[in-house]
Image 1 (cartoon, one colour):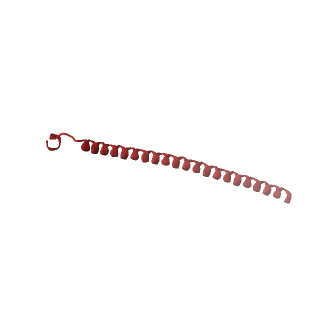
Image 2: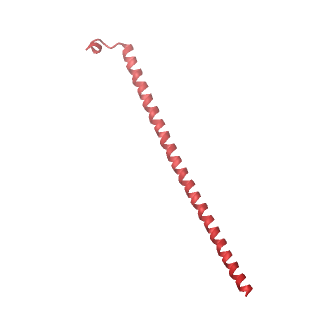
Image 3: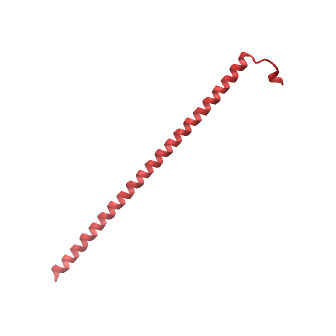
Length: 85
């Protein structure tokens, strides 16, 4: 019963309130940092998704350009064969 056998003094109550306040502050700080990490992670995921879409679009455009060049090259070869005969 040691601690609780005596009456709590004002300084004891003040210290307990101060400790509680510090713990609440630490909890709020932790939660805010966690929220910040989640937002950062989500933003990074969205950025990565946009980068992937951009890369896919660039690859598709490059493939379309190559396909168009291939078609033009084939048409030229066919014309050259027709003209040479």
